[in-house]
Amino acid sequence: MPFITGKTVTDIFLKRAQLTPNLIGFQYKIQQGASRGEWRDVTFREFFVEVKSIAYGLISLGLQPGERVAIFSQTRVEWSAIDMAVLGAKAISVPIYPSSTLEDIAYVLNNSGSRFICVENEQLLEKIQALTLGSSNLIPGVEKIILIDPSAKSSEKTLSQLKELGRMEESKKPRLFESNLEAALPSDLISIVYTSGTTGIPKGAMITHANMASVLDDALVILSNFSEPESETVLSFLPFSHIFGKVESIAVHVFGWKQAFAEDIDKLLTHLTEIRPTIILCVPRTFEKAYQRVQAQLSESSYVTKRLYQWGLEVGRRYHEVIREKKMPSPRQFAEYGLAKKLVFSRISDAFGGRLRFAICGGAPLPKELGEFFLIAGIKILEGYGLTETCGPVAFNTPDGPRFGTVGRPMSEVSARIADDGEIEIQSQKVFPGYYQAPEETRAVMDDGWFKTGDVGFIDDDGFLHITDRKKDLIVTSGGKNIAPQKMESAAKSHQLIHQMVVVGDRRPYVAALITLNREQLIRFASEKQILFSEYAELIRNPKIVALMQKVIDDLNRSLAQYETIKKFTILPDDFTVEKGELTPSLKLKRRVIETRYHQEIQGLYT
Image (cartoon, rainbow, N blue to C red; front, side, top):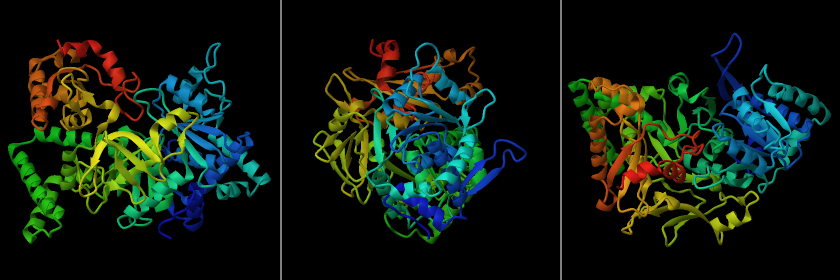
């Protein structure tokens, strides 16, 4: 049976284990022992047995139906197993980003009322312990801590010990686990996923079986003609704490994909060549960094190589223009493009493993130019759109006709409309039932069955959805002009030296920007140009670097309306980070924090 559907996540999970028990479903790197560093295969049946042991272990510790279990871990096979085991115990999972601040961790645990928490390792356990030190325990509701990786320094119960307890519990109640899976209703909660909180405290979006099943059904409609049943390999590195990653973790059971877990994002390039995935789910930053590497290498190349590269781009553009017009390329165009892919773009394709059929991209806007570049290079990026409150994607570009610069058409079960003020509103079974313990916040985003996304955009004549910005992020200059900063910030990051950009100008006479640079690339550039400096803060103030950035801004401004153009900018010495509270765990900008922290620098741009 190639694909599996069901009305509940547990039904899909159970069917997959029953129908393709010997199919390899997962791969991960062994971390200890003589086989350390080798990839281990796990069949769907073996995974089912692991999940069952964990579920029974949680039950043996007193977990009750409807209670919440927090998962505080990087993406790994145990994350997926614990998440499904929580459902097997009729409980509800609460994902927490490993990069979360202590304040956010405490809020999520307390707001969700989580009595159990599964913690990945010693390093993350220290964060939890920091909340319980001293006279005031900041997370009094947490009673049980389970450590995924064993630690000699901790006496907390380990995942291995939990599974051993589970095997003993199973002997007492042999059919309870399967009965729990079968008893789930579409309206039951599977998870409380907390939003990133760019403008305030996180809110817990309640996600049901029906929400997730609707997403997976529509994904199956779109991808069933393009995904090879039981023969695809997906390399997973997105945080499963994010709704996009959460969907990925369950989609494996629907499609029968083999899911390989990256050890660490820093080892992604190595894993791509080891695993050679056919599909990846990613964020635009994955391709922005890859493009910057290509441009950096090109800048160091010979004149002949640069000319060959430009020829390849032109050949690729002409070829895909014909394809977009639904025409057949000529034999000469076929031959030229085939040669360009071999001579010019093969190294890019090989860097992604050489087998990548398409990449599903979401979480932030993908610059149109990047989508077009990688298509020419032989990598098809399918951008989609969704939110935590819609259980992930509600619009998607299909493999047979992606339109870059859009997030695709609304999925088959989704209705989308544009409000009078430009806000995108969604009606769908994917829309969540509300925020946990926050009825007023829920009412604020619902309008007679329509969910108000907070995003501004439009639907073109061909039905493609365009996102222009977040409604709360829109800048209104003192001259009354409305400006969407995201498109400028997104376009700027395609330059090899720019790492981050924040556009400012609300209630001010013109638009300005804060910029951080790619430190490694900048130092290499300075070395090539023989720019002397004693420290990085001095380098970014060098007139040659400032002039180079001015040229980048000038190039960007040429694509903007006059009132949108960036008049001034300043280069900051340090990146915006999650740890400093300037980014959310999903790497979205916290504009209010940034504008407050860099108030003096911003004032300098207007004096």
